[in-house]
Length: 185
Image (tube, rainbow, N blue to C red; front, side, top):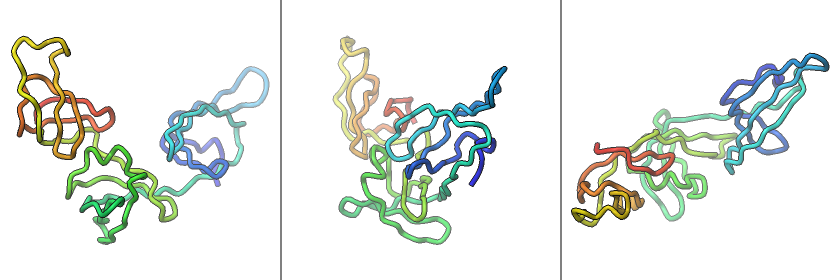
């Protein structure tokens, strides 16, 4: 248990049986009345962001979130198998937890996996990854109706819009948060 005075960005709270991460907080002391803490919270599982206000000094339940470095090994049915780089444990993480991160996962890639009481919550990928273009059509000179981009399929199966000069077999950098092309690798 902690109080609202102990809140920091990134801390995870257990409110009403759900896990919320503090995105930002602000202690407010108005001219009259008691102080309060204005927070912006993000739901760990759904990603929903809400604003919530607490009175100063109110006790809040801090959830223990264990973040571990893990290496992606392979996919087994609907599950993804990872290996803990510390104790070599190999947990199976459901596809629902991995979510869109599956579009940027390569075998032997290291990611951070967050657990709460042994239950996997989410994956933290690096901001950008380097992937090989598996298939893309050749860019035609003078084809500018689409803003100078064309669709490309990456080695993980993800679809990304790349500039016309990118060819099949090239390595490109992709932003894992937005899925946008960042440049050649």
